Image (cartoon, rainbow, N blue to C red; front, side):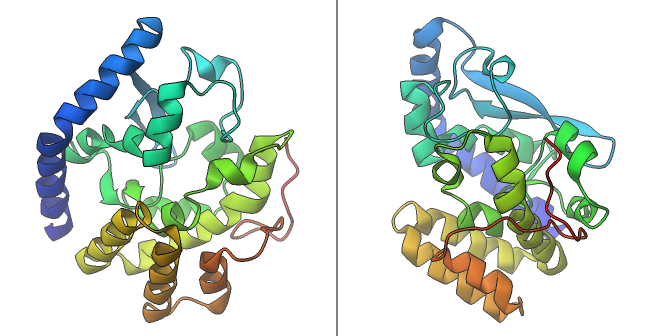
Length: 243
């Protein structure tokens, strides 16, 4: 109950504070092709239930019909305004509305496409739904450079599922076991810090993981000092090749 009240208070405050900038970006996006400035897409909230997640549109109209779900920074579908709002993470601001109406939380595992959940999630990964999907979490901090990781890949979806999702899922599962308002406050503070210094945010994420008792493997991944290698997702013994 306290977490929900916290979500409501911050989402209302955020929308009231940021609406002038939000309106400006909406106008710039609309002027590009005179189409909706919003990207609304179904995302999984449980095994069989979805909700409509809202973002500022950072790609060309109907981009989902001309490419995969995973996006690199070099993806030609991204518009010039899209590059700006993706870099600043401002495209996520409309999700404060999802938080306000209860579809999402400020902090929680990032919502995923139902197709990917149905086709690729292991039984262990379904425990990610033990927490309400969120705007930020451990994985959002550690993999804030997801687009850069996927840059130049001939198959971004495959690379995402082999080298990013296994660790994002592990970090998300760790959060579901340690979710409290105090942990949420620290993750929000680290998310704000990451806009100023990614290195300091990663070090702070490592410290928080350590305080909460994470294993050394997760703490090491949060350092992001080594190249990512293909790894099995939680609950699987083999690396996925089903693409």
